[in-house]
Amino acid sequence: MEAKETHAKPVDQVRKRNRRRKKKKTSKKPVDKTEKKVLAEDRKKLKVKSEKNVEEVVEKKLPVKTEMKVQEEKRIQEAKKETKDAPLESNSKNDDGSIRDLRVAVVGNVDSGKSTLIGVLTAGELDDGRGKARSKIFAHRHEATTGRTSCISQHIVGVKGDGKLVHMTQLGNMTAQAKTKAWREVVGLSKSIITLVDLAGHEKYLKTTMGGLTGCFPDFAMLIVGANAGITKMTKEHLGLVLALKIPLLVVVTKIDICPPNVLKQTKKHIFRILKSRGAGKTPFLVKTDEDVVTCLKNQSTKLAPVFMLSTVTGDGLENLKSYLSGLRPRQTWDNDAKSVEFSIEDTFNVNGVGVVVSGTTMKGKLVANSNMLLGPFSDGSFRAVLARTIQRKRVPLPACNAGDSCAVALRYIKRKETLKRSQVRRGMVLVDSSSNPKSTVSFEADVMVMNHPTTISENYQAVIHCGPIRQTAQMVRIRHKKKEDETCLRTGDKASVLFRFMTRPEVIHAGTTIIFREGTTRGVARIRRVFNDSFKDPMKAKDIDKEWDRIKAEKEKKKSEKKMSAPEKEKTKR
Figure 1 (cartoon, one colour):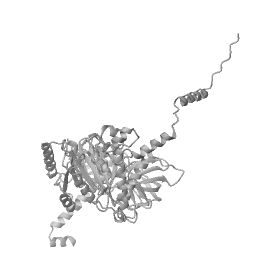
Figure 2 (cartoon, rainbow, N blue to C red):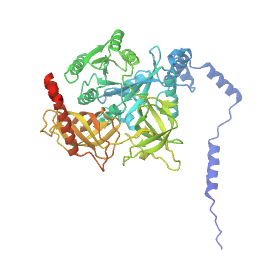
Figure 3 (cartoon, rainbow, N blue to C red):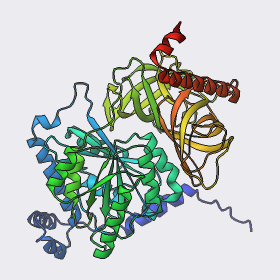
Figure 4 (cartoon, rainbow, N blue to C red):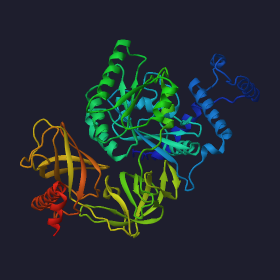
């Protein structure tokens, strides 16, 4: 007999059949209209108005919100009521829409409670002792798992006209849109803004912390010390960096609720002894009451170092820190009336539908949206024409950005055929006014002081330079002591004039800028004296700098001899 031909059913038909069978099995029984009405009436009766009737709702097994969500909703409603009743004076801003910004860098050893304190200040809620506050401000997933900050992140707190803080209404891991909305609410309700820069405390992220201290241009530094751990190696390292950069300091001792009294007393003595030491030269002042806060605010100086002792779990001493931060004012002065504009780039982003976005600080002048700028220097030292399309400050769009303000700028090439890629823009580049004539440099002269080095530093020594947002390896081409001119080596505590030369690419730097150089355990501070505006093809040679130093030395000796000469001798020399 002939075999019957069997045709396999198409795969789509089999899938459709399986879906129908599943729908039949999972189909719900029809509910009577009377049952629906009863359920609706029960839910209306059992609305959660307080914490007492939560148990009744749980017994009825109706879908209700948890206690934490109820508290969050109450806090949001209270914040909205305050915004409606708030006077117009508290929200006063400048004519250009700008708002005063105080930048505070938070430094300290790992596990001292930096991120937890920032989370408590931004959210307005106490910590539970198990990482609840810090989990709301971490930027990466690995930070949440390890509990350690590994990058530079910024968080804002608003200050009203009466000195009260404006906290974030939305908490936790928010989307970009939700975060933008929350930041705009804080900016809209505030007369001034406190930007808390969260820096890493672990030793392997020390270069990140250095970049944050030099590149974010903080007005104050907040040194966090764990009461139970005390002052450690990294605490001293961060304190040394703050003192080298001459940033005003305040000390916060955390975890006083879990620290034994004898250990707390010992930690306090250790802090006071280090601040009073010859190297620090600070005057520590323990803040206990509101009167102490007022005295610290009235007598602000670079030598005064207020010390706060608090707990982020119990809230002891937290109000003193809040009132002190709300009373601080930015200390740095910026050239807002300069004709040329300079914008220093700290970070780069790629935004869908927008393109390349850079964030940084306006160093001088006024950056205006839709203006033609020059971006550079590139690897060959050149600058390219770009268009600064839109500007956002604290996630709020603005028509312009004043000197000293940090903002984000969307960029594109002026020629639409060319596309600007994120890989072409790096940290340390600048946006300069197209009318100015920007020049990059490879070599510069600086007055150096070695803070720590195990042996001796000789010529051709290489170290990593931190100059604002710039981080690059540089070589010490020529070293000349101020007192011992014959020696060409440096030891711990020595001071000298050094000719530096970048190893990789040219940069834009200015005379008078403070820089930090490091290599292993080596630390040093320098102040740029002169910039030569040279290139790798024609760099400043050691022979030329020697001639220049000899000429400067001869001029100084001539001036000294003229001062020592008497009046008749001066007349003879003139004749």
